[in-house]
Length: 291
Image (cartoon, rainbow, N blue to C red; front, side):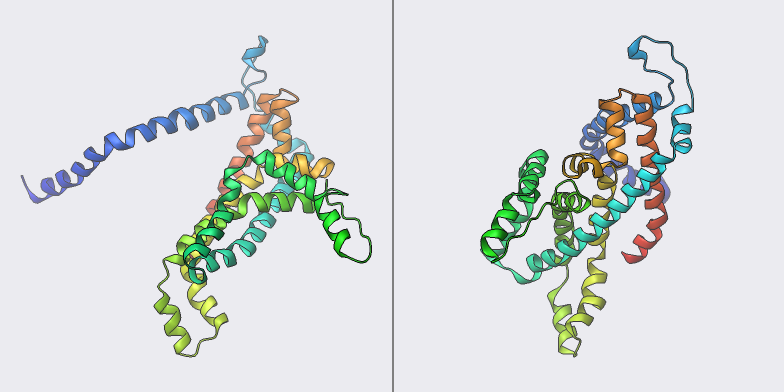
């Protein structure tokens, strides 16, 4: 046995040991993800559902409907804008909170704040959305509290508006930024910051030259975890936005739930998936350079 055979055997040995541990995860991925996606791909090229008992054939009409109907392109643009805005606000709110958790708070104070950050994960999404509905509506909690404090009367009614959608989505997804940035910030050696401060660097310069570059992997990971689901979100826009909450995700939901046009819904879903993958692929060189 030559050196190459020995090296190949040494490389294969860990893989053989890890295969029994990896196999359940890959089986689950195939069953839970790839099989449903394959079914949706099949439906997207059908003229009608076979479940309805009608004659069907393969067609590209479902994909052509996206390009021939301008409203779908407009709603896709609105959803991409919504994803960018929610990601921006989540980063703006979540990064300072992650920094305080990682570098400022200690002991029980850190544990208490960390518990408040992950608390939304312990509640149902519908409960969170309807809670915001009680806060933002006219005569709601926010309106009542402000009128009890201020000497003059005001009326705050943010329900069924674009800001209400932003508030609900930011509340739902900001913990992702806090968690990913917290892991990156906690890995930064405090001695680097202390050395920069001792050499006369201002707090802003330390933030710009040391903290942000070293925390960039967490920032990028949090941005991706937020942008991808927000672009296709439908529950928050539907409940908090009302008529103004019509986005690409709500149209897809209507095709599956209300209209029962699974073929068009599947085609619109895969167009959205393709657009998101193109955006992530175009941004990957920038993200790699940032990391």
